[in-house]
Structure formats: C-alpha cells, structure tokens
Image (cartoon, rainbow, N blue to C red; front, side, top):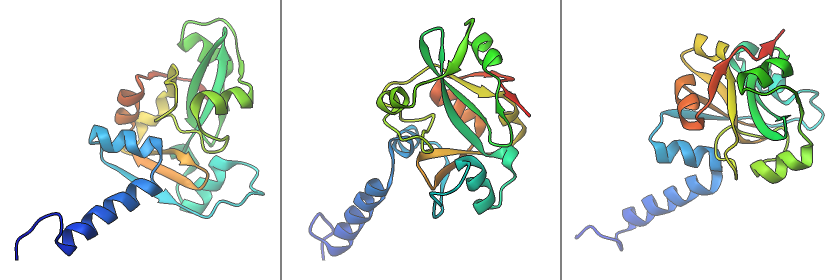
Length: 178
C-alpha cells in the first residue's frame, strides 16, 4: 500500500491537527508558530469565582505567585499590558514608570476586549489583535515556568518566563505589589 493523502492514517493525522487548532486560541497559535515549548492546562471555570487568577491557581494546585494575571491599563493614553502574580495586585505608578509614562489607570473593559480580542478573565498577553506594550513583573524570572491565560476563561498556558518576555517584547520591572 502506498502512503499518501488518501491513506486512512494520513486522514486521521490531518483531522487530529485540525481538532487541535479548533481547540486552540490565538495565544497558543503564536506559541506553536514560534516553536516554543508550552503546556495548556484547562479546568472548569466557575462563573461565580471572585478572582479568575486565584481560581486558576487553586484549581490547578499551583502556588499563586507562579500564576500571572494579564491586566490592561491606560498609560498616558496608551493601552499597556501588565502581567503580575495573582497573589498580589498591580502597582499602577510602577507600571507607568516602567514604560516612561507619568500616569496610569485601569483601562475601560470595552476597550480591552476590542483591542485585544479577548474577554475579561481570559485576556492573554500573547496573540492579541493589536500587540500592546507589555510589562512583566520581574518575579516571573524566579520560576522555571510560569502560568498565564491562554485566551479563554478556564485555560492557562505554562511556559518559560523568558519566552513570554521575548514573544511579547516585554519590559521586566517590579510592577506587582502585595
């Protein structure tokens, strides 16, 4: 038997690849295209959860310092992504300083969704409609791997912090606070 496009195993491989793409997100597509090692972790999201990031850490059994949330702020009129541990909060003044700005405030949720293409609670620093300036809290480098949103509620990506910084063109700075 000759191997080719009509062989049943070939069809199975093509269907499996198509199914992987269908369950992926723009964030996982960026990582796949870049050839980065990553793992996707999924869990059943509870709509009543008070904090998406803390929910992810609890459900996955990962220390909250290693799970990072993606927030979007307006820094002097420019939407800017901040990636900080879910164990703390964002220091807006530090974020502004990290990108050479003077003042930062949390961005309008509608603007976040429109600009990134993601819903709140599922915003990933990767694969956004428009790549925004990004700052990753320097504590990410304390870990071999970190977790951040894969672009859907209930879906996290585990990857090396250096890869996230490289692919987003991020600045590393102390922007998280307890």
